[in-house]
Image (cartoon, rainbow, N blue to C red):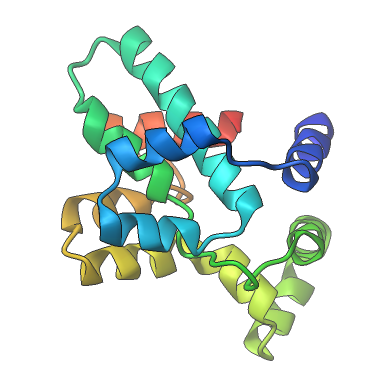
Length: 168
């Protein structure tokens, strides 16, 4: 757990989106989808790209016949509830630490208007709302639940998105 958090931090501070990444994004997202993708911080964009690349591998390994294009779109858009400026790297570190080590204190801070904690805790639902406004109801349904506790009847797409997100 600690090692993965350190790796996330290093990836966030060194994040880049290459020209090839841009081509990949253009191949999988339309203009409106790209707008909300590029409204995220570069760190979240890079994370979402890594998640999409992991989805490609998982779909090949999974063999359940899931819709690869749909899942790539979900992976690229799964964190659009966090737009640039909502949750800085420092804010995310704070949110992770206070939520992990002092969850009740985190709840109180969020109730008292701490924007970083609100976005950290609710970005899945916030992103789903953005996607619904674009008419992406199927994607919104999966993305809204990507941090919810797993249930036995979760669709395979949600399970794969969670796996890919957790790897990145």
